[in-house]
Image 1 (cartoon, helix red, strand yellow):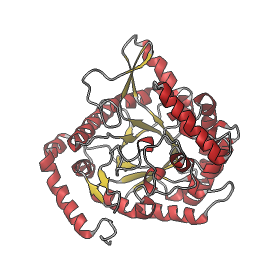
Image 2 (cartoon, rainbow, N blue to C red):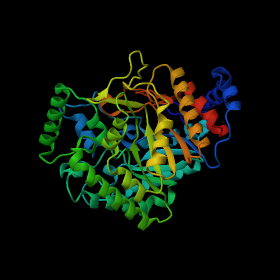
Image 3 (spheres, rainbow, N blue to C red):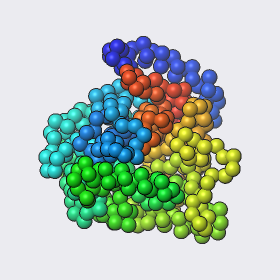
Image 4 (spheres, rainbow, N blue to C red):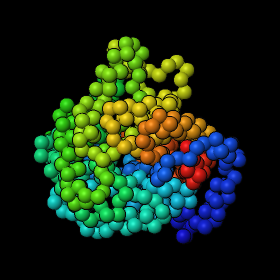
Length: 442
């Protein structure tokens, strides 16, 4: 592969291989590996990324419009992102080199159906090549069909606040399953389908709410549609039952096309804790998950846990992290123990096979990323010891990518991405988690 254009070249891979060999000793992970026990057969190790956040130039999407209106909620425009639409095999090559055996990524509805009823066969062919390349690298593809973004035409007609929205989403999912389903290992309909319920739990200032209203008004003006609605910012009281029906219809549509393809759902599953009466935990769990628990029980083959921190509540609502608590760059409390707690919750509440589909941390000090990974994996191992069937650990994310309204200021990645050349440079944490994955020890 050419190096002049910023791709991963042969010399990079040689240096990376040397780093992989040296990293365990430098990071102290060799003793840690020896202390870990074998993971269950078939355990999946990998990273997660979304289409819009990594591919770049998703110009027919609602998010692209929202980034480019004035005023906007977004710190940066996604622009080229990581250029993964063209450089996907570089990403797969890096994941393979690190030692992973799966890769979770999204396909973009706005590219596949850029205008209502028009399906781009060229884009479907592109994603087929992408899935084939993923498998050729020894990575099992775990595909997300919707990761917050929708086609602009869909958002302009009301998004998931319109009663007939489920049939459009199910139609898209069936198209994808018929053309691409045979190349997938697992599929999920929505990423964090309850994101609107999570957003509603956070306290918001009047200034923040005013900016949200003004940004939405700018999008309405740009589209000429007063019904304009984006998934993550829709009224959860209206959108939640429609999203749930969309998942059910999509699940059935995928199964009709590919009965053998496991189809699941992911929710944002933060660790709910109470600083007051214990009954507050159950109350706020209902606020965060609502009827999604029943939907996951009846219309999913597996459940994706996506956990980053704990959320603490008292009688008045969410409370700040404890005084002196370590905070990450995303503003969350550094609390890797949350992952095990949410796995236990999912096991009790839903009872489906559990995949950790996102777990990660945004920090500048990569030693803290390594510590977070190690402590999160300690929790997964504890859950396995308790008899809970956990089938994966998938870190968010392989690359520093576009983190929505925070833009490019929040580094979750195991690898940095040069914003000009797009060169991917693995951090020590990449080799650390890769050594654990290669050894398949947890």
